[in-house]
Image (cartoon, rainbow, N blue to C red; front, side, top):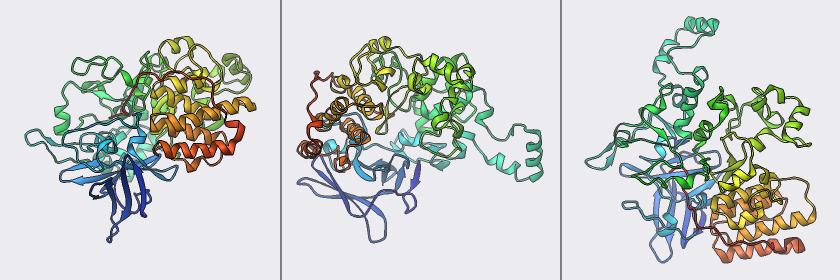
Length: 501
């Protein structure tokens, strides 16, 4: 999650590659000593070169930090690991192209919109991407002396302080004794042995945005929570109506109208809203295993692929039988439990994820809350209670449009020529005209999932003329399949939202 910048940790192509966005040219290369660096040259301005000091992330995309005195700043360009390309950080968040945010005291790299997501690491990213984070902010001087027990998310992030554990278990006889008794080791925290709520709080510390009445002690001394503690002692989860300096609408854009989270980093809130957790024994490690392979989701190995329903049937055993499951789902074909009860309505990290609020699908209720419904996530051409998925693609706010764009590529039901043409045309229109780069990115990816070739040559961060030219080339290759979508709605009011920041 966080590492010093080395040839082992840096994944981006620092080989002289360039990226142009919002009038700024960024160049990524290495200096004579081999250090990684970025040079930002605004149109008509002087270049600024900075050395990459640290990296953050390694799964979907990797961000880069530069050091300025006592402070680390997230740089405005990141590397997309899966797509192997550079992109502006403005493209990862649900903001329109021209949205500008000026923060006093923030350094200028490219300037203007290009720097919109330059963020200070010391009192932001540090809290969830490291072990025992402590900003060590001196309130009198405003200076940081930030420390961590370890960079990145390592053992002690989930198991608590480990020095006593290491010392005690240097004795091999003790290890054999513990193993024979199958007893808990009192020198360390094992989340699997905690009560379900306490276990979930270990994950909720970072996967559930929180608020505290007084943030000053956190800034001066760090987050006091250690695994096994009661998380509520120091913080409470953010909800749709949580007040911020008296404003009860401050966090509303991060949730659907019914309070369901619609951004990542709120999975803990979704769990707390789920009857399976409130009335049962469900906790995060029921389905996720931190030591079980694929880091993309860390779903337990025994629940991957066709065995995914086992996450639910380990408790709902009566539905493990195929015939019983078909009667329950009212679908003749195989439908995964999570498709209906944990639909993909959550945006984060240039992707759309499953909701962690486990609930019974209700299209009318979802429409009333202004959120996409589970049925429309698969049956994208149909109307259930609210707009169809294609209609939502042109009429919703940025999260709604992101969910719709993603669904058009995921819903791989058998398609006739007319349905395929409508999807392709809709996605091509979004790739040209949508004001939000992240939505354009998801539309392009969906088009690729439909089997359209040549999408990789398109870049959602391009300005309108370049995007239009690339889309017209794709239209020409598709021919009559790319006819214009007939349905259009006026765009909804802007719902710009941040993700966990």
